[in-house]
Amino acid sequence: MSAVPQGVWRISAERSRIGFKVRKMGLYFVKGTFKRVNGTVEVGAEGAPVGGWLRIDASSVSTRVPPRDWHLRTRDFLAVREHPEIRIAVERVEHAGGGAMLVPALVTVRGVEAQVPLTAHWHPSEGADLGTAVLHVAGTVDRRELGVRPRRPVDWIVGRELYLDAVLHLKPAW
Image (cartoon, rainbow, N blue to C red; front, side, top):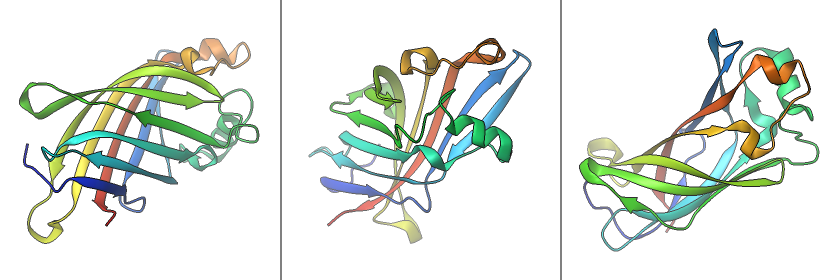
């Protein structure tokens, strides 16, 4: 893990990707992304992340199937009228071997907060992208812990485990 300058780094929304997938009927995965995101990552004196926050526009969810996207925005899932943002807050990062980091994150969906254990890898850029960095974050959470409990029979059709995967491109905020 290479060191980068200490300070606050902003997420480059146009280059970053926030993705998820969940099983449908136990047979296949439905994959999606969120298109609008902002946030920062704080880099400590040792040149590695120590905390940060992320705000996701819940209405920007896309599975590339418009009727399904509409349904995901309803009260059955994200309830975007009442809860327009998904929030992620990280106050500490634990460094593990091999450049991996354990990230205990506080995730808020539909006004419900849950501690979600995430893993991350930090990739300072080189060459033409010098002065930028990439943070790859992944994790799994039971959607019910986040208050996502659609009506039956939909609740039985949609898997409980929600797989999260994000690639955050960062640039210095200074």
